[in-house]
Length: 273
Image (cartoon, rainbow, N blue to C red; front, side, top):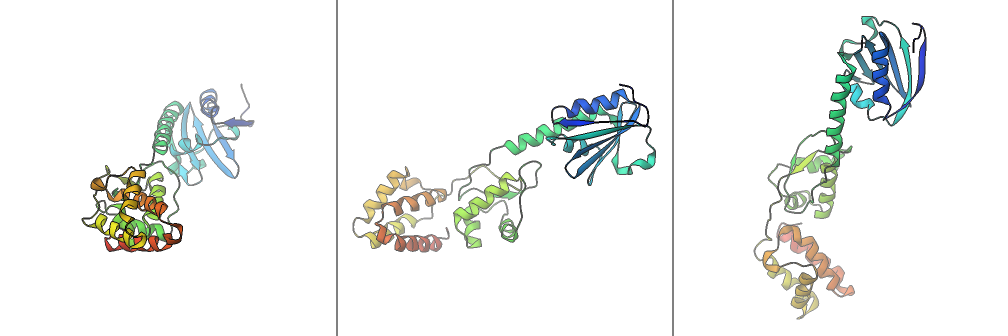
């Protein structure tokens, strides 16, 4: 298609057709400017002799613009044929590479980001050990005051249960917050360690339930362990929320409020809240 220098060509694109369109404009026209629009956003690409010589989008410049464009679902374009002066774009926007090389790099980068974002978030338990990191990919994370407080307690050595205790928050709340941070690539977890419950905890738990439910309290705890498929001789900190909930299900409804309070006090006494 031969166009006079003053002419432009307009059309629509989607994620699948954009790479072909970029290669077409780069290789079939000696020089020109390509405008790509999606909503209020506008990218500008400058071509010369088959090369992408500059690119800009919002506050992005250079090759990173192409990687960003490949995430657009669809949009509109308009190509203007003609030589571009050096004043047409800021120095930071310069690229000076073939469009094929830039596209290949952008596709590889995009695949890496998608693979990172698709990595499953590890199962987080009370004995999981988080550490801070900033990695590419993942979902957007809103860091509010509570999240910053949580992050201040992460040192790469302290397990989740201790962090929850230091913050005075329920273990389930901290696990939910850490799951969000992990999906956003803000924290990672070392291989999960197994931290046994403190010595004397189970004896104290049996005593607490007996005080609430009477002589049959020990049988009630045993039934809860069985229903939760837990071994009292091999309990880890991460098992406690499951066990506490299983016991509550066995407690008479009129005594559950007292049990919840006593269980919370017991957890706090052993530094597990």
